[in-house]
Amino acid sequence: MKLVEFFNEDEVALDLSADGKDAALEELIALLDLEDDAEEILFKLLKKRENLGSTGIGKGVAIPHCRSLVVDRLRVAYGRKRDGLDFNAVDDKPVSHFFLIVAPPVEISNQYLPVLGKIAQLCKNPKNLTRLSEIASQEEFFSVLEDAEV
Image (cartoon, rainbow, N blue to C red):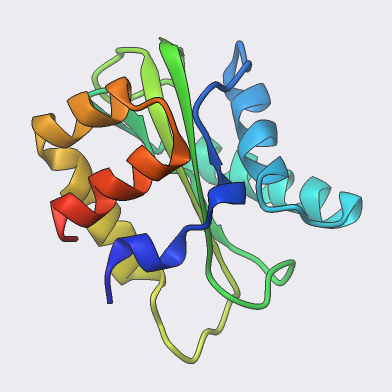
C-alpha cells in the first residue's frame, strides 16, 4: 500500500484561499465532493477533534482527521496555503500543508491509522516539505508522493 494510491487529482488543491482554521477545514472538506449535509456533519466532527488538540503537527503541517458515517471508504485530500495560516500548531508556526483524512467508523481494510502514519512519515522529511512547497501542479504532487516511497 502506497500513499499515492489514496489520492486523486480532484482532492488536491495547491492554492487554498482560506484565511483561518475554519475556512481551511471547509475548503478541504469541499475537495471530497460530498452532499451539503455530509459536509456540515464532517465540519462539526473535525472542529470537535480540533478542540481536543490541534492536528497541526508542526513544521508547517496539519493532518485534520476523523471517523464519520458520511463516507463509505477512507478519503484523503491535500491542500496548500503558500503563505500559511494560524492553525494552532504545536510549534505555534503557520501551517501551509494540510492533509485531510476521513474514514468510516468501521472499515474492513483498516487503513485509517496506516495512512495517517504514512502522511506523518512523508512530512518528517524536510526535503519532501520543500518539494511540496515548490510544486506547481497535481502531477508534481503525485510525483513527490511516488518519490518519497511512503
